[in-house]
Structures are given as C-alpha cells and as structure tokens.
Image (cartoon, rainbow, N blue to C red; front, top):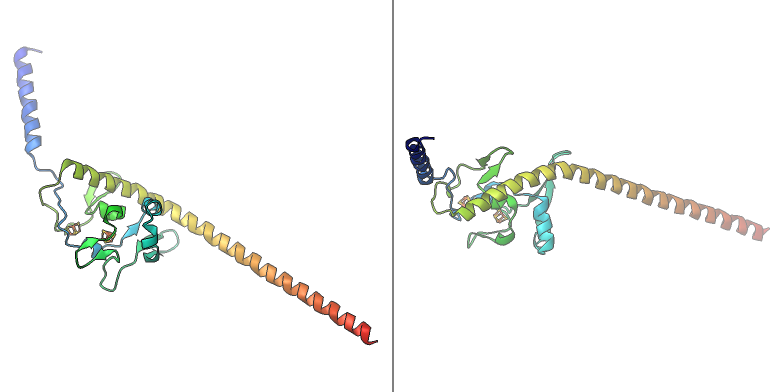
Length: 205
Ligand code: SF4
Ligand code: SF4
C-alpha cells in the first residue's frame, strides 16, 4: 500500500475511534434509590437466587415470603408483597433493600434485561435512566446480571413444571400407600375381632 494511502487510512481509523469514544453510551443509568421497582414489579426468584440464599443462610429470612404462582407449565416463584404493594424486604424508612448484597437477579439487573439476542430496558420509567456516572465495571456487572437472569429464567421455566410433576406424583403415591396401610390395619382389626368373637362363643358352650 502506498505510504500516502496508509497514512490516510490511519488518520481515518483514529478519527472513527475518537468519535466512538466521545459518543455517549446508549445505556446511561445511576440508581436514584426511589424504591419504585421494589413496588411495581413481580419479584420473580430464580434457581441461582435460591442456591445463593441456601449457601449464605438468607433462605431463613425469606422462606416465609416465597410463594409459587401461575398455572401448570408456567409456574413462578415470587416474593410476597406487603399491603402497600412493596416487596416485604424493602425498608420504607431508609428506602433500602434489607438483603441488598444478596438481592435477586431480577433486582440486580433492573432496569436492564436480555432477550437472547440483545439487551433491552425492562422499564422506561425508571428515574435512574439517562443519569451519568456509571462506571465501566458497573455496566459490565449489570449486563452480566441481565444475561444470567435470562439463562436462569429459561432454566426455571423448564425445570419447575418437571419438579412440580415429580413432587405431585410422589405425594399421590405416598397418600395411596398410607391409605392402603390404614385399610390393611382395619382388615387385621376385623380379623382380630372375628377371632375374639369365635373364641368367646366356644367358651360360652
Ligand atoms: S432502579 Fe430505578 S426505579 Fe429502582 S430504585 Fe433505582 S432509580 Fe428507582
Ligand atoms: S429484594 Fe430488595 S431490591 Fe428486590 S424488590 Fe425486594 S427490596 Fe427491592
């Protein structure tokens, strides 16, 4: 390549690079701690959340707040909300999450989500959007969390109906076995009563 052309190409490349560097990032966000997302969303819990909570003992704090909703084939585990519609783990006085360090993936990634192809906004009304100050590490973390959330919810959508089916079948089998035992013991009792009756009749002759 002639030297002149090479020089021109380099100049163009650095011009493009500098334009890209100066371009504001598409996703600008700094949480304003308004608490709106702790009120408006269904807080869906994933298998990695449950696993983490078992390991760090948070499960003892949240177990009574978990419930399964949905219909066969589309079950979800969610965190129950209080009468005002807030997540029960939200502290309204100081506007903080009481399990912040180990909060669910759905909260970590908010307001970002991943749909299998690209990153999107879960909410366009979050007041933290368009606020400058997010570091590269924070951006990487929120993207990683959104990606992990996508994988985790696919997993739970596939696994939960199967688990539910297995547990339901086991409960039916256990209850049938229990009923059979009762029925057998009643038969034994009847036989015992019959034997006693015959014995009494013999003695009275
Ligand atoms: S993520 Fe958005 S909606 Fe949630 S507390 Fe922060 S600013 Fe408010
Ligand atoms: S778990 Fe924490 S961050 Fe998530 S909704 Fe509840 S209070 Fe908010």
